[in-house]
Image (cartoon, rainbow, N blue to C red; front, side):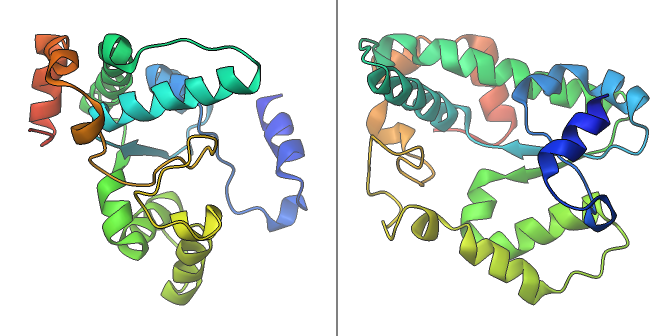
Length: 199
């Protein structure tokens, strides 16, 4: 049933589909079950500084609320809750890896700095026998860059009404106050540090 739904949503001839993907964050908690259901499944983990994730998630919610005529919310008061949610997903992925489930991690920051190498690593993990050339991958990177998808904005140029709000790593540094950061739990701070995301 799950495969039928995914095939239907792909809207492509079945004999032309190389792989089917799903990016639901909640799946992070169910990798062992998914691996049992789909033994051939391969998992990608896009890792981003949790503080940037917190800022991005808050503004995404704000945009949706404004579109529906709602308001409210305080990034500084709520950032620690968004960080805790990121930490839960991230710990679940690490737990699955420690249980022997292969997961390919690609960092958001690396994707911004070298999209081709990042995409090549993902493709080689998903399709080990692939014959996709670097030129094809570079075309995909270019077509999906922040500038291309945002209508020409440079990374760092903010459009609060767009799902592609800022397109930049490290934005938490000028959006989160020291007081907001002080609300982060010690466990979440330690996780950030262990992943190389320090001040």
